[in-house]
Amino acid sequence: MAYRATEKTRKHKEEVQHKILSVARQTVAEGGFAAVHMSSIAAAAGLATGTLYRHFPSKADLMAEVFRRVTQREVLVMSEIAASGGAAAPRLTDALEVFARRALQSPVLAYALIFEPVDTLVDRERLVFRRSYAEVLGLIVEDGIASGEFPAQNTAVVANCMVGALAESLIGPLADEPTTTTGDRSADIQAIVSFCLNAVTGHP
Amino acid sequence: MAYRATEKTRKHKEEVQHKILSVARQTVAEGGFAAVHMSSIAAAAGLATGTLYRHFPSKADLMAEVFRRVTQREVLVMSEIAASGGAAAPRLTDALEVFARRALQSPVLAYALIFEPVDTLVDRERLVFRRSYAEVLGLIVEDGIASGEFPAQNTAVVANCMVGALAESLIGPLADEPTTTTGDRSADIQAIVSFCLNAVTGHP
DNA sequence: CCATGATGTGAATCCGGATTCATTTTGAAA
DNA sequence: TTTCAAAATGAATCCGGATTCACATCATGG
Image (cartoon, rainbow over all chains, first blue to last red; front, side):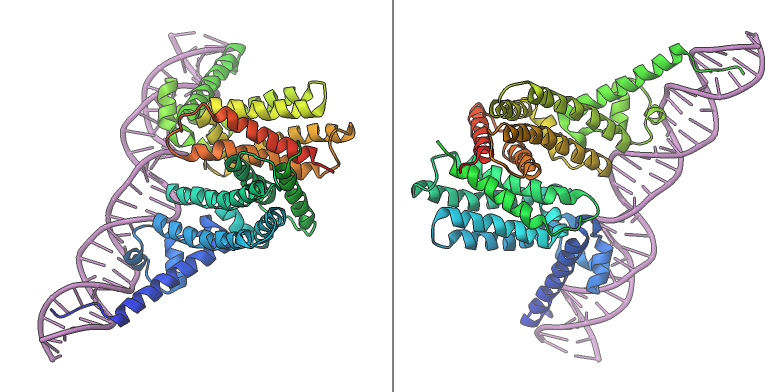
């Protein structure tokens, strides 16, 4: 026995992985998944192409990992808001608004996470991602129903509808190449939020 | 001068093009865009691969054309319903229901048209497609506002929200491999329709 | 029947980026 | 210092389907 992994080694390995993921994340945030190439990631991370494969079995896996990390953060932000106490309606409003504001803040990333075609592995993660959002929103709606704020309704479907409404109306338009200059977007946010609130609040 | 295109020739050319488009459409309907290969299209149409390129400059163009034709039909169906007379609310209901029913009738095609990643050219068409749907729905909402059935609202955003809600809640779930066996889907349709109607009808 | 250009053919080529792997470098222990 | 194994390297390879193209066939008008 003349070699054994040690603390230092392990730490270094972790750092490298982190570096790779970080560079990849940034690349995605700037140019979407389409802009990601193993060679450029390697270059930007100060590594050789082959080295990436010491840490990730394939580009698809790397992309999936990046996706997972970014979306986890996003969902966390929303779920924290959802978990805050108080009436359901304002919580729902807040949750929807956060989604919207964050999306408009980093449109490229938002587009990448919600719509951009990548590959099967990432698409699978995307499903999880969307479902997570739906779950968070669904929980709020359930609370509202329990407390009598909202009428009874199919929370699963309703939650999906809200996710779809947000995605389509906010990010869909971003699919056009040039990010349309805006500011009146905040008006859009209002419209979307009241759309969803009306829908959930219903009226007998 | 020893050759000139004639009626017969032109007709034949058209037939071949039609055949190609038809075969391609069917392939997409059965297996999505992923299942389309120039070679198999050619084989199924009884042609050589190269022949396809006599009629379409590239696979992307062929796909885009297929997409365009199929979606035109779809939008037409909905817009006819939208244009029928009567109050806005029932028209909106009908329009949404038609979308839903058709989507569930051919899930693979619906997924292909709404979500499946293909290529830039098709993605551009998809944008047009979605916008067309939104326009149709938006017109109904405008009618409703004009007639006092619905309160004033941002019709453009609202229309997008409805398209998103439909897409996400109906077709999103279809992204899972095995088309989940169903029947209770019609319950989902009801939930989606009332979601949208509540949203648009609002409540003072 | 001939000349001409359109149309059809399908095997060979192209393509661009992911992936591999023989080689070199580095770190650990003895 | 030496030896073993992990880690790094990056040029060469691989890949699979779109695309091309040299050649054959067909339709047209003379």
